[in-house]
Image (spheres, one colour):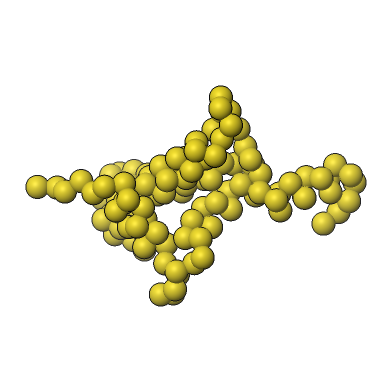
Length: 124
């Protein structure tokens, strides 16, 4: 029987999946949130990473093997990225003004500065 964990449990497990060298980052989703530097919502960035895992799984289906990663690892990673996307989507939904589309890009401050500099003719 498969136990369905609660959303809180899923969030904890997702953040555990992003530990780096045994040390938790201040924001365990910082790497995924960096997609905002390219004007891509963070939850969409997580799904893009998930899609990379789907590509690996498709490759396994065709070739019956994977290089450098077991199928089980790709499946687990896909599950984690999907949960991360859900957490980030919920964060954005809770913080979005009423009626605002969640696919509307909200670039990070670094990306916003880059865009301003480019518009002003400055080079970075």
